[in-house]
Image (cartoon, rainbow, N blue to C red; front, side):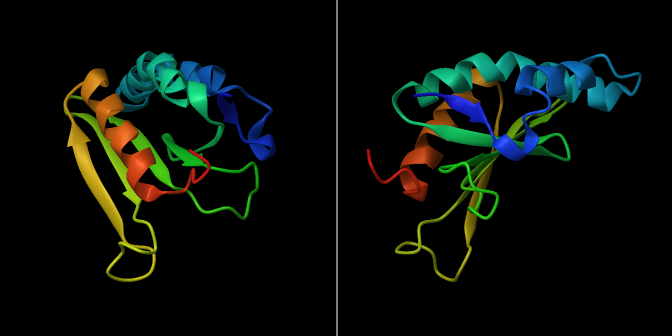
Amino acid sequence: MALNRASVQRSKSLEEFYGELKFSTDSISASTGGGMLDLLPLLKDIFSDRDAWALTSLMRLWLLAADDPSAPWLVSVAAMPGIGFQVTYRMSAAEAPWPDAFVQGTAVDEADACRMVRIAVERCRGWTSL
């Protein structure tokens, strides 16, 4: 099982997408790309026991439980240069106070971001087979 690039965006791997950003002439894009490149191997470890599909948009990584463009995103991660990482997850329908409610927080480093992503994956309940 693995962290996979969603089939609708398979023209570039996640590493290629963030690698291009890392070498951008724009300092924000370069910092964002570098931060996400550092985080990707750690995120792949989180998904060693389940499949997840990743989309990228606006430099953010959007995680889904199915390789289906109509599937809702469940967890989102973005590098925030000089701050850390923003981690967001969609609350499960049973816990959400209204439809599509989400939780968002800021991680100070890669380890903290991974801790938050693990919690998000568990609490969103989108990967129900585990």
